[in-house]
Amino acid sequence: MALIVQKYGGTSVGTVERIQHVAAKVAKEVAAGNQIVVTVSAMSGQTNKLIELATEIDEDLLPREYDVLVSTGEQVTIALLSMALNKIGCKAKSYTGSQIAIKTDSFFTKARIKSIDADRVQADLDDGNVIVVAGFQGVDDNGNITTLGRGGSDTTAVAMAAVLKAQECQIFTDVDGVYTTDPRIEPRARRLEQLTFEEMLEMASLGSKVLQIRAVEFAGKYSVPLRVLSSFEDGPGTLITYEDNIMERPKIAGIALNKDEAKLTILGVPDKPGVAHHILGPISEANMEVDMIVQNTGEDGTTDFTFTIHKNDYNKALDILLKTSERLGARKVSGDDRIVKLSLVGVGMRSHAGIANKMFASLAEEKINIRMISTSEIKISVVINERYAELAVRTLHEAFELENSTVA
Ligand code: ADP
Ligand code: ASP
Ligand code: MG
Image 1 (cartoon, rainbow, N blue to C red):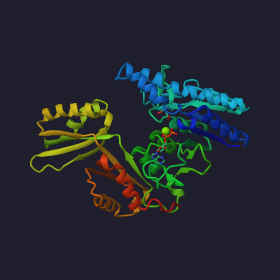
Image 2: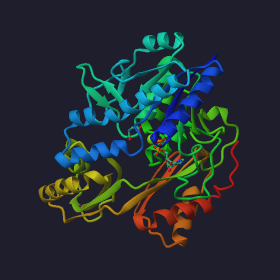
Image 3: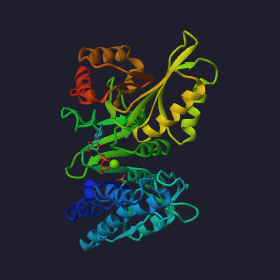
């Protein structure tokens, strides 16, 4: 007998038929003698609809009330799934996040899980129940409902698996695994048999939304075996694993595309100590996260400074930067929100030289201009005009032969 945590995303529970299909899959696992905890998302499109309703009242969403609102989507699907399970003779109980004490901090709209009452869940499981847990939500110390950020049901599932010491956490979605790149952009993308936590973390944080970043972080931290699978067809999916288990790595695991960033530049800033602090301080005080940062070496006593932030923050950041520019006596501020960030990810990069060069050469051949570059041990990111996003993904996918690279 194994304890397995399964998570089904929005598309997988998008209709009553699909919920019944999920119930049948869960019942099969129970019949095989396993204990199952299921986490579900809201029905597809539902969370967006709720957010639209709220924006009709006020564009500036009240974070506490936002969480009360968007957490309702998952309350619908847990009840329906539990009903569907009981209907086919599989004993099940649904719980909201607060009912099973998924305790979080109080950062509404992006709260972090602190603890979960595992004993209660375990007792219910031992009583022969399937436990259906609402994804994406929790409760803070003051009893306020919180949510975990978009895509947060993945994190609920991994956290449940961690506290229950589940044998595996299975993320069922509308693709049959993690691909070399988003299969919606490159149809020739290939499913990876496995990839490392490090690679998955980079892929997720660089824009591959197949798993929420925090879910991957959590899985890595608590050594939760994590697998991404299709809700609609059987198959092995993709196992997220430790590097040590993989004998031979391909150079590149995959390509991530992030369409959510915008770029800002302040030109001709007097080049003296504290420049970066004076420019980025007000940005971070306004609660905006900065991603890439590039500062030129100052030749004539001035320097240029470029950074990227989330597209949603673009106008706010531009206003702040204009004020900073006046204060510092800079020459000019410019910005561009029509950019994308494209990244190559792979632990194999550590032992292979020349990957950056090949990437730059391939993009140059297609006349794609690179606007910013940043690298780490296992990734290379470039910022390019959004017009070339799809072309660049396909070009690199082909250049690095990802459609037929072998996976150990
Ligand atoms: P769910 O609603 O089940 O959580 P998501 O939409 O959050 O599903 O995640 C699945 C989607 O992630 C896929 O439909 C796919 O378009 C996208 N995706 C982006 N990058 C990748 C990748 N490298 N591999 C697989 N899917 C990816
Ligand atoms: N329903 C939430 C969202 O759409 C959480 C999730 O699906 O994981 O972001
Ligand atoms: Mg998701």
